Image (cartoon, rainbow, N blue to C red; front, side, top):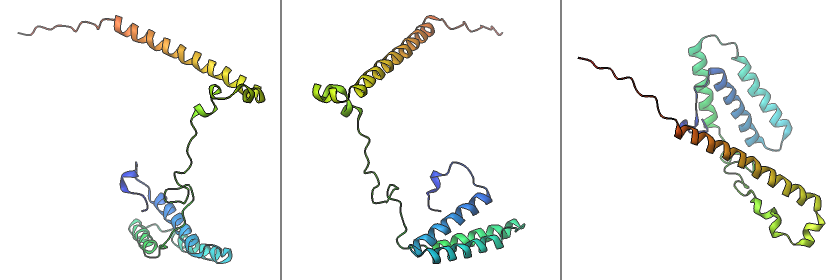
Length: 164
């Protein structure tokens, strides 16, 4: 498996394990045969044929052995430098994009001349900021009222039982 065991939150069915093995096999073909589309397609058809040959296996013990053997073969034939998507962990652009903070477009930092160039944008932005602040004020007021109601209510007296 590519992912550590602690990342899995539920047990996988046999079908899910086979599907994930099939997908990893196809990715491995892409790693080995990269740009040659004809060879990639041919190898993927061979892998599909191998999986389809055992698709109707009824014996669970044999299907478990086939799954383990497929995982072993995949591990033995893995590529020494697998393809990584640029934004995935280990990719060339991983963790390079940063969310720009909202203060960059805040209207306080723009000069009057710059604000006059984009009046619709800044007017709409100011309106949205006022709506957001009013919304949060309403939520805070509701929270304060709920907390006040909770604090003023006395807990019900517990029934006292006298046992002798």
